[in-house]
Length: 235
Image 1: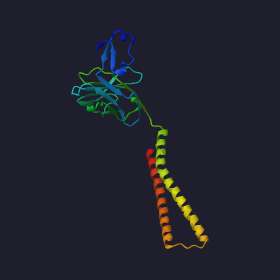
Image 2: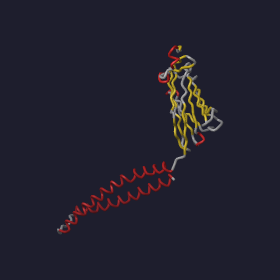
Image 3: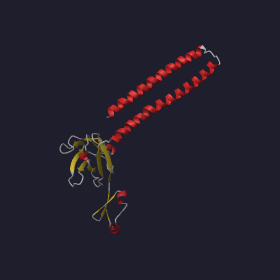
Image 4: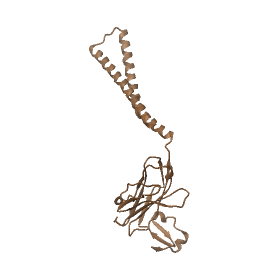
């Protein structure tokens, strides 16, 4: 720790970036740095990951602790929802009972958790705190969670993407076949006018062409069936 001196009276705009905390006229060098997403958006019923990472100057030991807290919107009440020390201790009471899962790895500097079956009532501020003695001085990042219903536009965009993936390749193949058939038809008309007779090889080519046309028709029908099936599942 270092006395603030004259610099303290003017503040320190770069202190947060340099890992320094100004507290009661004293500069404290942070030995533990914690990072979390400032804003996270999720959808009702779909698991949400709250990411939190940390860097410590000391090796991880069984004394390391992680605490996640939750504060509802427009409220000063804070609720503990997860605690870690060698083992995971998700809350067994309150709004998040049986819905918090540990998805982190302390040896990789990961203190993330996951919320299952989120609802709009889960909106609020989440805080991630890590202590790894003797590293106990750290910043406390917060994450603002916004949970919403998936709108019709979101589902429609998924259907549109599926349509593009299914129909564009099929359309390209159809166009190529139509061009090929058109060229062959023009050639046959020209030959018929001149009294030209097909050879055995050309007769065989015509048979292959008919088979290709049948296969293409079946492919288009199958693609349409797949799209209809996926569309029904979406809704």
